[in-house]
Length: 448
Image (cartoon, rainbow, N blue to C red):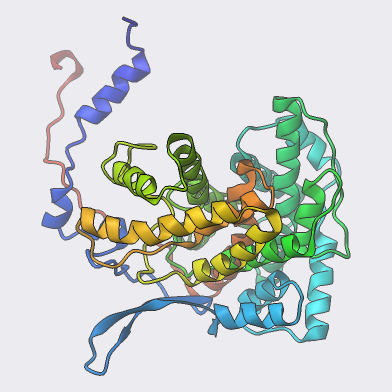
């Protein structure tokens, strides 16, 4: 039997001396996770950037559940998506403009804005060599966060918090995120998987989603539907209210007066977690495990597997069916509904209809099973992560880039919220915690 290390001994000490138990949150009326038992969030601020709805008032003034709604600057996400898809053009750049400036751009404004992003779609001289190739990492989110912090050293006005300067920094980061993440991935594959190294420079005539596919693939090729689906995913992930974990992090760190690079790096750290931006990877790994264990064409076997997950007997034994349920949405997640429609279309192009049908089977079985197994206070439905991982898989994107792609989109929302925070708050965000440790007394060293 191996001897415990000093760190293991200290860890046991930390665990032994943690006396907070779940019941204490109820006793002290603490909104754990800043949400009450009915899923209502604790109000911590005001925002014009976006609104998330999952309930409405009936004629008697009572709250009733409704299908999920998401609004960017007051415009329903369905209308935004239908608008640019009807025109047969990408929508991410238009969405970024809307989030940052509270209005939809006209054609001339959109062209000028897209050209500005294209101009910013570059990195400082030798940055890729010095900051990415010389220290290749296995986790792309960590490399992305490290790279963002490193860009501080290349910015002569890094600490200037004026709106023009912060806006310039945000636009540059929006344009640079795909390069930072994809180049980090190519470096990882070369130095850790012995693959050939290639670096494609972005093309000024291509939009964000097209450039991601172009610089990622060795031949630089992609189909129109692939570019359309990735662009749609970016739009749907671009923003989701001020209360999600990474955006709240953006507000919290911005309220301290920190520079843009520190703020965005902190948001990246939040997004990395499997309870937030890393959730779609968990979904994919859950389905991979399912396929290795059962005949996924047999609905009864699928149902039995899901039962085992809920009983903590399958997959990672957490009792969670990943991709099901959301902190806010109840009856439906509008982003999931949109993505599902186009994921089905892509599954036909890729010959993956059977895999899509498996997702639909789980989506139909899981909500009722979850509600039956445990006490919940609202309905459960598939969230956007349930389908986004499948879309990325059909696009041939590697697992390592799933969460960074989320970041490539959400940097738009983070930027809008950062600008909103430094313009409107002027007060550091500092919530209260209740001290529950009993008073003790100091004992001299020789008497311990």
